[in-house]
Amino acid sequence: MPPEKIFVTGASGFLGRAVVGRLAAGGRSVRAAARRDAGGWPLGVEAVGSPDLAAGADWSAALAGVDAVVHCAARVHVLKETAGDPLAAFRAVNVEGTLALARQAVAAGVRRFVFVSSIGVNGAETHGRGFRHDDAPAPHSPYAVSKWEAEQGLWALAAETGLEVVVIRPPLITGPEPKGNLATLERILAKGLPLPFGLAGGNRRDLVSVEVLADLIDVVIDHPAAAGETFLVSDGRPVSTRALLETMAAAQGRRLTLLPVPTGLLAAPLKLAGKGAMASQLFGDLEVDIEHTREVLGWAPKSAVSTT
Image (cartoon, rainbow, N blue to C red; front, top):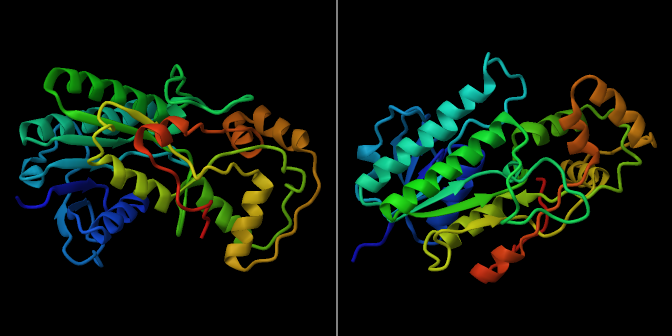
């Protein structure tokens, strides 16, 4: 029999590119879908164009002959939101677009659908114990709500059709040329200015390196126990905001000056300005319990926190 063909959406993105590289390095047959021609694909990767991720998208040609889909494409956190109705914008892509792709995958005979969701489905902050895979969902943002609704739609489709769905909920993803909040921190560090986070060493936040997440995705594509499961993932070593900044500065070869400002004095004005989520990300805890992932898959993260 010919080798299984794995279809990766969002293949030119931060995570998608790492997944394609990981799968190709392991000898898998990969079809990479990207909205722009990123070039430089690993040897043997079949690159195809990607339609907009929407309810009316036609994926039929891209899904022909595919055994498993890894769905990395999404509308992600928007730092400067311009949509009049952010939740509707997230739903159009992350819910309606995802389910349209999944339905067409079923029609094409795809066996397994791996959906990259978000730890935001669990909530924004932990208090005393890490989030678990079977916690009651508490999505805290339009983005997280859309990911949770997509999960529910995929489970309903699985029950109806027999499609093997696997859900992965990562926290903040680290790695070379990061996106979102980590990219913002990198730009701030590049200016070399003193930062008021010298006392932000008491919080605990789990992260996941893009390499660790790509490794887990590689495992769940064909692990017999993965179908029908939700997996949380992390590097297995929570860090504080101060430790994260120190690691990032060291990776960039930059000198870091941290001023000892009480975190309460920093968090209060952010909350008054309606930026409580930012205060939570900077000074709160977000721990992830990955014991279920370890036990079901016999898997463990193979590298430490990476911010380079």
